[in-house]
Amino acid sequence: MQQNHFKGAFKMDKMEKTQEINRLYTIAKQSCVVCNSCRYCEGFCAVFPAMEQRRDFDVRDIDYLANLCHQCGECFYACQYAPPHTFDVNIPAQLGDIRALSYQKFAYPTWASRVFEKNGFFAFIALIVSIFVLFLLASALHQGELFSLDFAGDFYQVIPYGLMVGVFSVVGIFVLCALGVGFVRFLIYITPNESITFPALTQGLFDAFSLKYLGGHDNDGCTYPKDRRSNIRKIFHHFTFYGFLACFVATSLGAFYAHCLHLRAPYDFLSLPKLFGTFGGISLCVGTLGLFVLKIIADKTPKSLKTLGMDYAFIFGLFIAALSGLVLMLLRDSQALALLVVFHLSVVLALFVMMPYGKFIHGFYRLGALILYALESKKA
Image 1 (cartoon, one colour):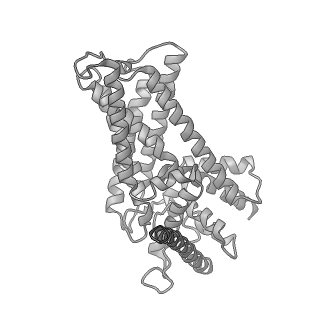
Image 2 (cartoon, one colour):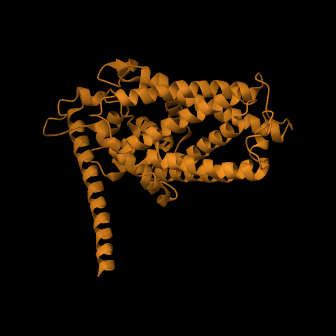
Image 3 (cartoon, one colour):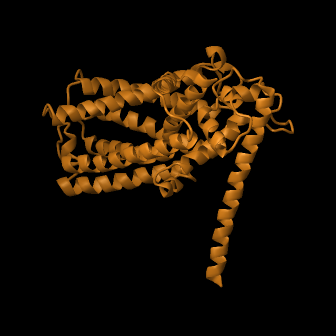
């Protein structure tokens, strides 16, 4: 009897979750119908011209629009049907809720997304601590005395080269597969009757890399973090995005130096890996710290509360990874090298594991949505 009771409770939980998902989609559809009738916001961003391409909205359309939206809040402040109006139109928050569902719907493997579904920030911290302990044990077994050796700035004396490369290779391949499968799933889902053309692909890539729609209406800024226009969010996004890209280039160059040129780290400050890494680390720190502050002071009414935990976790993870990398570069000849290396690698590895299931994947889904928007715009 007790076992049946628990099974019944589990089924009820799944039923309630399904009902909540259906409710969120219904609300978003109703708001889109109102917006499509009003059309006051049609020049604000890509979302509203995309709405005008449709007379009715199904779940597929809502998933597409949700990832086309960048949740600036401009339409909310301009809307005459926003709360407390009975129509309760709140496009940024309602599409933000759907966007959180899309992270789970197209994730690969699907079960992994549930780990970060609730309490994403705490799950991320727990992951860092777990990896830190494992790396610390591996380092202690490798050297015997973790704190008494003079490492002379050599990371591989702290963590064995084979272990470091092996762990990050396995995790890297898994993350690339998860990101790729999630992106392809989403793109195929929203474009069932479309053929991706080269002009649409290039236009989507340009709009994504230039953060085009973060400029707001007439490129004079988004209503973010409050109802006044500002380009500050776009600026911090550029710092974050291109800082991350520079760090990726630095890591790739480091691998090229080590495996192709047979040059062993640590490298000189004026070497390409060091220059890209320093620029990327500083840029990431500036961008993520700025975005973190903006998110804290932002008006929560037009924001989705379902994504806040993972948003904070991702921004915090990027900031700590960048900061610990810069500190590691400055103190690589100190006695703190061992702990700094282990901590930095733990944060980076945890960040990699989290990427396919939170805010990072939105960049890929948004690219897919921008490609579809480019396709539809050519036909309009």
